Length: 305
Image 1: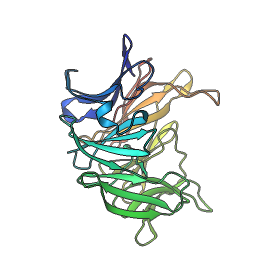
Image 2: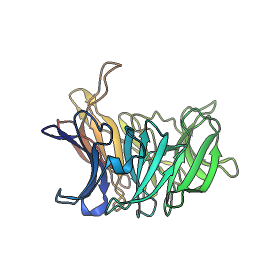
Image 3: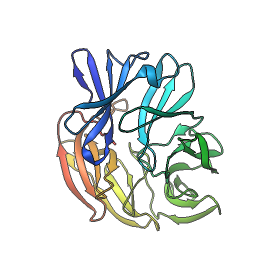
Image 4: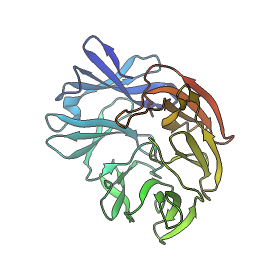
């Protein structure tokens, strides 16, 4: 969770690869007001090795939302998605080592969630239109040139769950016989390549998680593991439990080296307005269909991609 020292708050935003470093946002007060905030890069020993101020990253006077960080497909650029009050949306492309600005480019669409498969390669990131826009737009933007590398549209009566390739997407739809069916859909031919045979009820992690030939969809109290091509159900891994019953699987990321899935859990809540507190951690092996770790830490946790 955010680290508070005196009147300064530091929020971890993104893991910096295998060396154990990370990127963080530092500000005074209750939030990153105006331009008086810093984006920091820490090494594995928690030493600040690079920094840049909001005054450099913003092309206006105040921050509205962000920065939300992600890497390009080739991991050579760090991209900060920044919403400001004066301008609509901006992608600031940074050198991941020095945090110096490489390029600035606008974006008319929302950036796709980092947890979902995007099929982005090279210096691309994936953008998509907001839910409810019809038809739904998919754009692969080259952030170095500011040009669209690829684009297409998807039917808007389905929820986009991720992109396996530039023309094959995972989507969550329904038919007369089965609600919330996960499908691998070919945009070029308009055909369903594969589909699950059971219904899904996505929980707090809405998007699919793809790792090592598997696709994982999280329901509140379990994770369903599918083959990435056939979408055949390989197994269901239940969440752990505490005194209130089965715990809720909240958010998760996949380790690219091992394929293991690391996520957070929360106790069940019994009121409609209560948001579950993430205070547990799990490690799921989608290959062996086992929950290798399930620990209630007891203090609030924040998962960092």
